[in-house]
Amino acid sequence: MLKKIILVCLCLFCLPALAGNKTLLILGDSLSAGYGISLRQGWVSLLEDRLENTGHSYQVVNKSISGETTQGVKVRLDNILSQLTPDVTVVELGGNDGLRGFSPEEIRTNLSNILDRLLKSGSRVLLIPMKLPPNYGEAYNQKFSLIYSDLAEEKDIKEGKFILEGIAGDHLLMQADGIHPEAHAQEQMLDNVWHGLEPLL
Image (cartoon, rainbow, N blue to C red; front, side):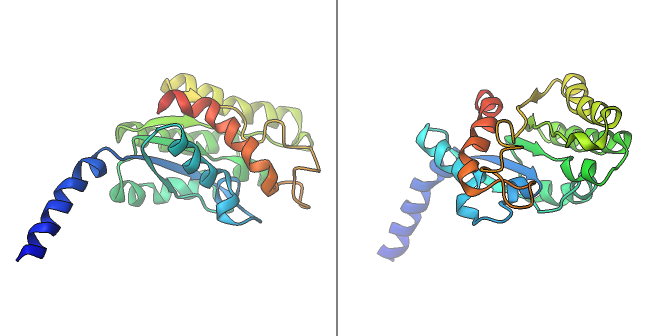
């Protein structure tokens, strides 16, 4: 009987801490899934440490998948939101769509749908803009880049820095494929994300 009373008291003591723990959702592709490196080395894992060190109480839920597209997240978002209610969401998507040459209109429509549903859930949203290599052509690259700035303005949400700012194109920071960053570039990726994320926390 005494053990039961102690257990109940412990549970009641923990409730305020659990209630104060907010949720930060990451929706991304291989750049956020830690492709080619261990998960512990990735920027999302480093984010957990930074949140703790800066006094922010958040549970980080990483739903990023290597190879993910805007269409993929659009399809599985309802299931994700049925499991949790994010206070803040980082959307790092569209890179694979662009690399596969999907139409900017389709990418924009999918992202718009995703953002609308996140905002409807009550989440604050950070939209991470993506960039493509110059060999995709000036016209396509311009339309692709405008997707992010236009949606950020339309939805009145925060547009962050390009996650590979200061990293892309530097062979010392990139893996052999030239697309995915090395482990020692993850801190810079976090800094790029943190620039837009911190005001939303």
